[in-house]
Length: 85
Image (tube, rainbow, N blue to C red; front, side, top):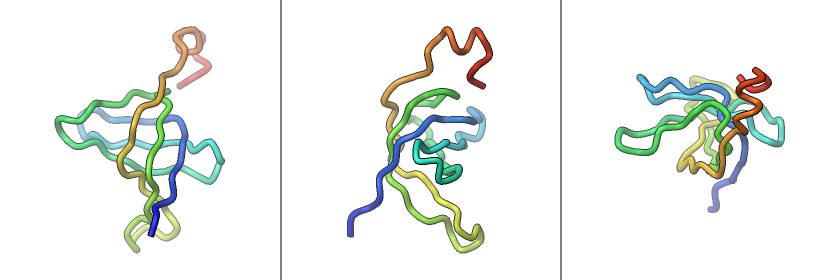
């Protein structure tokens, strides 16, 4: 069974907990992800692709990203203007 794949932008990432959220390009709702120690850290605004799996039953309807891979990052001009948070 093939996993569903997604693409989107990191909207939140906590470097201390290695936990964050992705806003998928298909506007289907936030996707939760985490980065293992030793893996590349993410930054808000990074463009990523990932595999999607349902969250454990405690979070009804939620999605979790696995194997998150950076494909690009936000333009510096948008950061300076505050257009990307």
